[in-house]
Length: 145
Image (cartoon, rainbow, N blue to C red; front, side, top):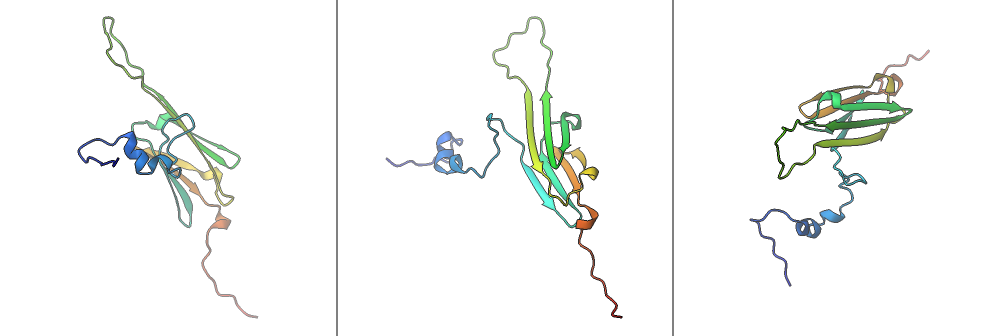
């Protein structure tokens, strides 16, 4: 039997299985509880590290950043309460609750005392400056006596 992919159909579980996505463990966008985790980019430049967390639909007050020793934890818990009317009958209603927690071990050159964060356009940006002694120093001339 030959499986033929129909381009007019929506992707299915079979598509994910045969495309290899089901066994691609490098795509670690799910937690052990089968909830989706936000995607993260980590960038480094000579002065700092930047962690970008893609979390659209949140408010800056939904996030909690905690530094414990050299582990930075970014977490969020968001509940949307909606008021129901007295004679309202639901055919289908999905609860609105989102939460996640991601932890990152900071390198020794990170300055945990100066971490800052802001949330804009669905992206949480966490800036982690490097310690002054870890920053590259310009070359200098040494005088010979």
